[in-house]
Image 1 (tube, rainbow, N blue to C red):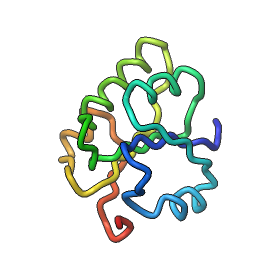
Image 2 (cartoon, helix red, strand yellow):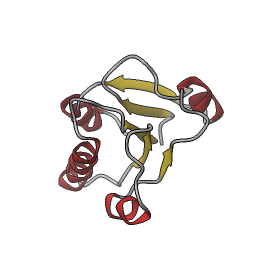
Image 3 (tube, rainbow, N blue to C red):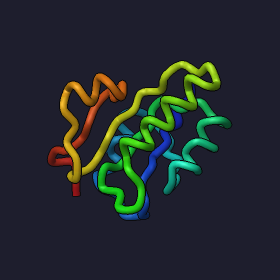
Image 4 (cartoon, one colour):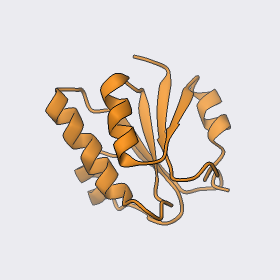
Length: 111
């Protein structure tokens, strides 16, 4: 397993304290700003986790997660841990289970 994390967010403005999160988990972050870029990255690298911002204005985070899960299935990859971050959408337990989301961050760590 690599120590890489893929962060999907539309802007360079971080929605939470990314660096502290990655340092605490010994992760190196790679950033992309669209589902197309994320799918391309997923084909090249196995990530320990994928963080998806719920604060995106141009793309639907749920659609991104569905596309990632579909690509994993299509390529025969083991599902990657997905963590959702942001203030815009709080997922219910049922949604998290259906989308196989490992966790969501919407606490004091958000800026």
